[in-house]
Image 1 (tube, rainbow, N blue to C red):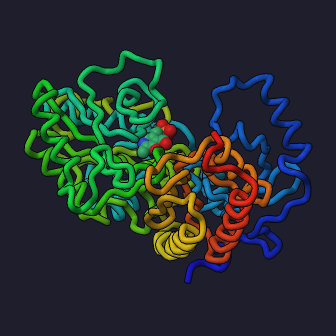
Image 2 (image 1 turned 60 degrees about the vertical axis):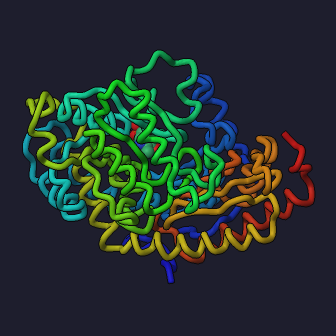
Length: 464
Ligand SMILES: Cc1ncc(COP(=O)(O)O)c(C=O)c1O
């Protein structure tokens, strides 16, 4: 079951597949580069990079190697971006061949045609209209424009715990702390509780709740909106808040609410798409048929490419049907198209969706075993290679473990050669889709060692 090692045709026998450490972590060269960069970069970099203080030089499959030659297992994948893993010479060749021919422009192009054909083969057949962009927020903003344009309405319903990017029209729909201090946001944006069953906002339990959160959405729209809801915008699994997996009947029930209110259902598959959850798109788990889907991150193997895909009739009406409504300087340029075409082809040829399912099951089962052993693990959930863990002081109260303890977990894992998003009490695991069974087991062994250390050496019930 699962991959033995990377099937990248250029995979060298000597390329590392497991952690190997040579220096204290972070090593001297990493620290030197990190400190030198600090003179130029502001403080607002990604938290994981600030905590790690590591400078990576190269990668191979699901491993990363730093400037001191230390090899780490990567359970982050650039936050769900590096679907094919690191250091892919086949991807580099595809990009290089295209860069030598043509990089810029949005005229019709053979490479883009091949990318569009491949993407449409993988998409549900009813999502036939594709608009290409570069970043995730850009694609979600376009989806919101489609909804406004088609319905003639302007309001949007989003969810607690959600993240759709940091640009103007989506920042107000963030259900995390990232929008604090940036108001006022676009008007007519409502953010209501998601089906985060472990931390249910209504303190109910599934299935006896009867999906009360969906009923709440219905009533909320009735009571609070101006009757102009153009879209419900939802992630099929909420990634940023902690890889939260809702019940299978949640999305179909939300779609029903959208239909009742004359709104579109927009599903944001930025992280969950391209095979990460063990299906090509996470909507396949529930069978829901959205009106619009936004995709990005893993579809380009690391190259910035994203897309808004819709039912064709939606883009044939209103201002969005006008030429230029979905154009941008870089979106879907020939180089991005080459990355998209190559990445999607490799995901299919190397059976990475199946690998995500199989190796994800190994990780999930292993983590559930760890949950039996360690009282500070409150919940383990996941789909494929999108896995979340809640760390708690007390399983009854579900009070999260303190930041100090989580930073300890993060840095002790790193010192053993495992890069995780383990610095928050809702830990996210989203490795490259090429992760092998052996690598999953190695990661589990490191986590077990770290958890034992926490149990022995940290006052985790009280530490802040
Ligand atoms: C679900 C989701 N949508 C949108 C975005 C925004 O993507 P980007 O950072 O490319 O703008 C993210 C980023 O993490 C995301 O997780």
